[in-house]
Each structure stands twice: as C-alpha cells, then as structure tokens.
Image 1 (spheres, helix red, strand yellow):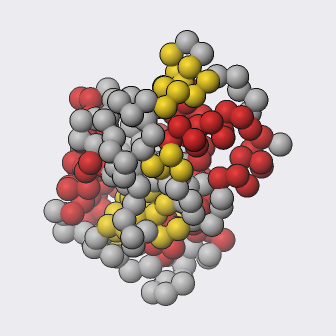
Image 2 (spheres, one colour):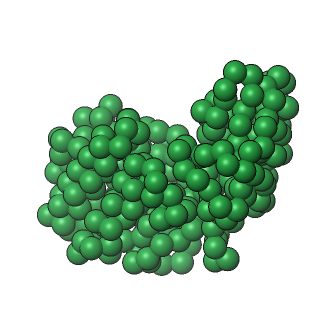
Length: 256
C-alpha cells in the first residue's frame, strides 16, 4: 500500500453496517486499530454523542453511514448534521484525513432528495479544513433485489434501460480501505464493478437466479427511485477503479 502508515487509529462511522463491518475487518487485518462507531456503540454523529471520545487519537475517519429515512428533508438533515458534526469534532481532535462514501452520478440525479443530500455532504467536506477523499461508488450487488422490489407493480418490474455498473460490497470495502490507509486525495475517486449491464437486463439475471417469477418490462420512460435517467447517468467515467468480482459469480455464491 503506497503512503500507508502502520498502526493508525481509524474510526469507521457506520461501522456496523454492510460496508462498515467489512471495512473494519480489512483495516484490522492490515495492522490498524479500526473502531466501529455507530449508535449501537454509543456514537451518534447526528447528535454528536460519543464523538469526542471515539475520535481521540484518531488519524483517519471513514464515513460510510447512511440515512435511516430517504424522505427529502430527513435525509438532507441527516447528512448535513452528521457531516458538520464529524468535521467539527475531527478538527478539534486533529484528524488528518476524512474519507466519505458517496454515489456515482449523484450530481446527475438532483431530482432526488437523497442525491441532493449526498451532494450537500460532499460540498461540506470539500469546503472544510480537513484533508479528504470522497469515494463515489456505483450501486452494490447486494441492493439489486431492492431495486426490483421498488420498481414492482403487480407482478411486473418496470425499469428504464439505462446502463449500470454494479459492484460487490466486498470490493467497495477493499477500495475504501486502500484509500483510507493512503494519503488524502483532496478530490473524488470513482469505483465500480467490472461489467456494465442495461438495468432491465441486470434485474432479469437477478430474478432468474432466484427463480423469481416476476416479469421485467423495459420502459425508457420509467424512473429509477424517482429520477429520469439517461443512458449513462449511473455509470462512472473513464478513470474508474474497478472491483474484481463479476456479478454472475456473486449471484452464484449468494443463491447457492
């Protein structure tokens, strides 16, 4: 690992979640002291509870937390309040690197309150005094069934045909770990899966592997979480760092 310093204390906000729990394990395996911080462990970035204590002696903070509610004003309040608190407490504790997980294409999906909140979060980080790395990831394999469920009407799954380049949560955690252990980028890094699919095709593969009888209907006018997509809204640019796991292999593992 280039620029990696040994034995840093790295606090993972959202450390008990899907990405956070994998990330904590990986950082500890690399000889760092990774601390999983979440409301379950008495650390609440929204209220500020436990932040001063957990950040004492920390070199890096990685924020992989997610909002409990996607309602427009609630999600904005969550990301703005928690990010402001984190940055203020980090400055007081002398933290030297703030890493945050965001979403590829957020700036192209501002019809959605969730993505407006992610951009607000990114802007707060960018404008703070703390060196930072923002990681924008594509959709996780683990959430693809959720996309199908959200887009279901009756026994039909109605989806746009836009491209998507999903990534395994395991690969997201690995990439986030590498960035957290390195020097701050003071910019944005995009990460995505090894392959691109049309959204309707991806969901068809997923449902078939689970023997789910729902029919997938491709509708170019259909919305994705309320957002009107163009062909490339959800896919990263040319400088993307690619995950290793292919969707077919992940599906085989997760359905066996």
